[in-house]
Amino acid sequence: MAALALAVFWIHVLLIAAAAGQDLRDLVRLRRLLRPLTSPREGVVGLMRATVVRGDGPANTLARNVVEQVGRGKGDGTLYFSDAAHRSEIHGGALELGDGARVELGAVASDAALVWPDLATRAKVAAPSSSEQVTRAEPEARRAKGFQRAVQVELTTGQQVWIAGSWSSLPAVNQSTKASASGREALARAENTHAGSWRIEPGVAGQLLLSAIDPRRWLARKCWLIVAFILGAIAVAAACTVAALWPPLFDWVSMLGAGAALGFFLGVQPVGVSLNERVRTPDRAYLRGTWST
Amino acid sequence: MPGTFLVRRREEWRQIGIVAVYWGLLGAMFFVPAARNVFVFAGACYFSFLNSVVIHNHMHQGVFHSKRLNLLWRAILSFGALYPASANIPAHNLVHHHFDDDGDLDWAAPEHVRFRWNLLNLLHFPNVAGPRTFAGVQRWAASSRHPTFVNQYRLETAFAFGLTGLLFVIDFWTALFFVVIPQLYGARCILRINLIQHDGAVVDSEWNHSRNFVGRGFNWIMCNNGYHTIHHNRAGMHWSELAPAHQREVVPRMDPRLDERSMVWYLLRTYLLHPLRPAIGAQADAPAAQDDSLAPREARRAAADDSALAESTLAVS
Image (cartoon, rainbow over the protein chains, first blue to last red):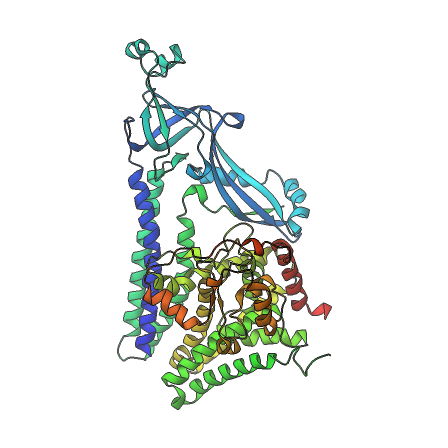
């Protein structure tokens, strides 16, 4: 019976580690696709830093990340939010690379758009502006449908972003302008020429990424977090096993080991799920949260 | 009171019998060394799963006339599964029945597991569905309009873990091997049933969202929990009425591939004989299924919420 219990324990610890490994594989794959480029190259998929110079969306926004939420409360001054949907929208616009080259970006279908907000900014946007706002929302929050809202984080003109997709050069309309000047100067002098201009389209697994944070750094941090979890889970499980099998079997140390194994078995499952939620990419990271008066 | 002595319907004695047998098997293994054998242990594991089936049925419609007795029964059932039975109200009655948590995924949605080797999905499913369920229950409880939910939930937790803890104190190893393992087996199997009943089905559909297991013997011991489509659509219908309702309402409208005669054969076929996870198989609703015989899901959820509230509140009894 003890052998059966230990076998079941290990099967599930390894399954939880393997599920975390699936998340790790996905993030490593994504990071590999986000190859950093020093300058755009024709037909290459990669990541560059740029500044938003024009947004074709409402209020000059280039893109936005939207979290639809439902707030519920029982009238005690606190509202609890759950996330109903996460959406990325790229409206189109233009960006400027570090060397002054211009990048034209068209509107992108929602299933091909990835907009990563800065999560700290998103948390600030989601916070109530005043206790009156909470009080006003409470009656709706008590109804069956709840208090519905959309938390939006926008990428707008002047903002530094990371952009990744498939790069292609725009045909130069005025070659003489391209030859005589480059970068900002050229764009300023010949606004309609597209000199030194690029277009970017979905290419990161069929998607186009616009991010307010360094995506490679974010991915690296999350990958290390997963690696630490996997190694930690296996190490703790091994320690519990050693203790449970400590001679004489079924004596005090063995009993403590078995108790620890049971506790770890019950505890590692929510930790695994919590990790899975924590490594969701920022475009679909849970916001949730509460409002209090 | 109309009907029968103590219970609302005479069929409920079957459920009480299941729980009595389960407690008998646990008690035998704990107190009688000779009963600690593979047959009694396997029986206890199976009846632990049935205990969770009884939790499911009881949380839809209380077994007893007395609401106080129903709340007490929840605590007894909670010990059998080592989780508070009242967790089923938000997790099953309100979220799972409508495949939706305010727009987010059902806490026990098949999508939460994604191994290519399908057997691993079956094994792993409780590791993710369980924690998501309990985290979801905590979030729901924080804003719930059910006034007694938190107290009842705590009482059931205290009883389940208190009694199990007492058994640990009396005899650690016997409690671990012959009580806790069967308890966890049943609780985890009832979570797995969500995967078995919905993986590959179309949850947006009204008649093809679930897989049914229609064997007569299976449904006798499972208290008709094989008829899952009709149970989802008519949550207020008593379990003893599900078989004819399945024939009458579901069979003419459903994709026939979602009716399985044997769960054992389905499990063997899906998780052992075919190692890879099958693609989505069921069709969307056929034209005949698109009728107005069902209330919208929102209305059904509100009705389930009202019903759970009425069952849990002593003041209105």
